[in-house]
Image (tube, rainbow, N blue to C red):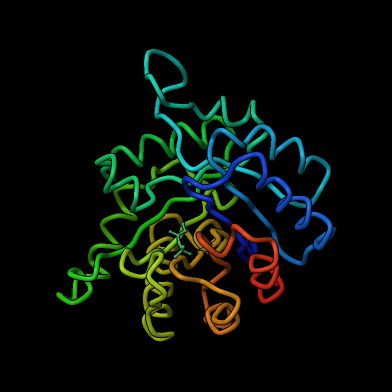
Length: 247
Ligand code: G3P
């Protein structure tokens, strides 16, 4: 059985003042009935991890370099994320694929680096609106899964997030049937490639405009093991309501 996971991606948001949100979450969820993860910007990871130490809330980063160290100005490595207290890293988010030209091959190499360093990789896939309208969603998701995920993963160090690009930050979500179709497809592909033990243990998250008002119906979908939440993870009250819907 895959672990239930409520993950927050703060993206390029947050300063010292935002750390109060983590205090509120820790106080509200001393022992949540699901895994809770916050991925703040890299500048806050160390501080947020220190704040969350001893609590049920895990922390992670939003990207890492594929190399362990070296001349890569502006980048951080998987080892550095661990050093800052993180245990997860989001990889291949569509904003990085678009803003930084990340290909499936690059995401694959980063996933290798992350899992090799002992982090849990949250690999993101998802189609644009043009691709959905052209009926290419499953083909695209299948290609991204095959290309972005290396052979050497386990059910314990891989999470996959389905984030339709057109649903991110737009307030639009796919229909429940569309979410179910993609999640069933991803589960089948993972089981086919890695076997039932690993394939069924990978948590599959839905991401894109998840809010307290729609979380319950999304979490009721088979093979949805949680959510990767952007905007609604910035406030403890909203994210708390989403955790409540999952646990
Ligand atoms: O990674 C989370 C994400 O892209 C969804 O963002 O703001 O639509 O919840 P949002």
